[in-house]
Image (cartoon, rainbow, N blue to C red; front, side):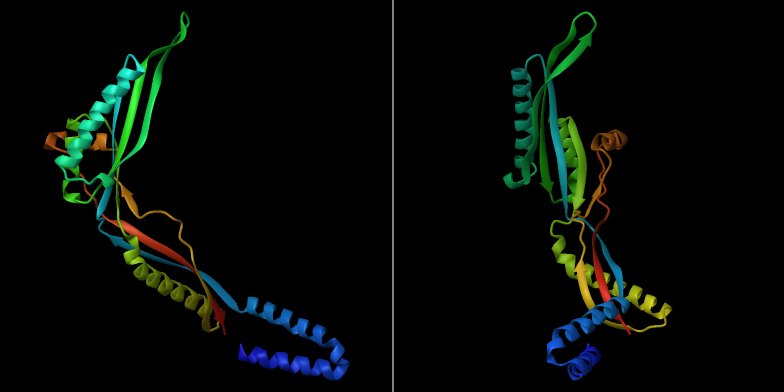
Length: 251
């Protein structure tokens, strides 16, 4: 940057001597454009990636009940009784707080049948209610799902394992991403027979994805585990990651 300041001063002085003060603005614009073009020729841009594999500390469970009945009122009433029983179980037996139980889906819809003789007709109603349950004792996830199923849950979705506070690992993944960018940029500079200068800009490019890993559909896992006497759920590891777009000077 200092070398370019010196060049700019020389060009401005030469312009003043040759064509006078009235051409000062024109003399200023020319080297500014040349500087911008030279900077573009003397940079390297890379993407650095940082990732950590960590044991999850929370799981988000989808536990639902679907009920069929002749009328919408009956379907909804029966479904509500089952959900109330499951909710009481989660709070009382499993000690899950109110804030960790949230209704995410609720619907009552007609069932249709079709025949050439009668056309389309309503043949009963389905009521559906789903709870999202946040649970932190990962050693008992399988037992919790079994208990919910025994209480009437018949629509158990994916278990989503995660890090509840991934920001605790943000510094580590940023450092890994920056180190990765340094290695890439240094290799490019060496291949180009140049040397790496200072960092010009850094931009963090997160895609917004939560660090999660999914298990198989809980119903499938239950069938596979029945012979062993209960559902077995393995949390494994989840990944916390980030990407940095880094621009370096080339010397």
